[in-house]
Image (cartoon, rainbow, N blue to C red; front, side, top):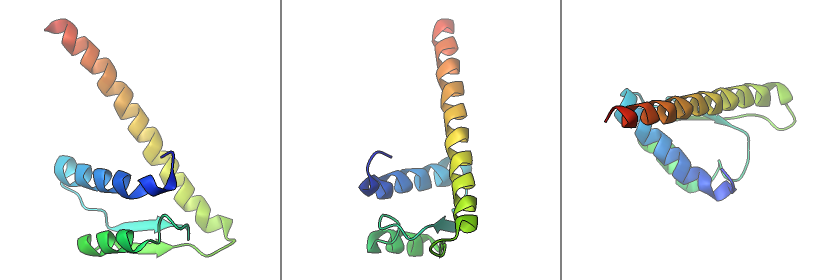
Length: 96
């Protein structure tokens, strides 16, 4: 995410991927009180799915650490999956 306003599009894409590929719904969305997370558009999307929206308190690094670790895990998992798919795709193209 290069700009904060991109969050809505990225989240809707991720949400659709979870529903179609994994048959899962996002149950809880945790974030800080940043403006990109607290827009009405995001609240409506979360309410549409029945997702619980939790925010952390200001100046509590303990709570922000949980969200940061989860975010880091998601990013690392995505990177590994993309690298696997890219390397597998090259091997598959050689077979064809």
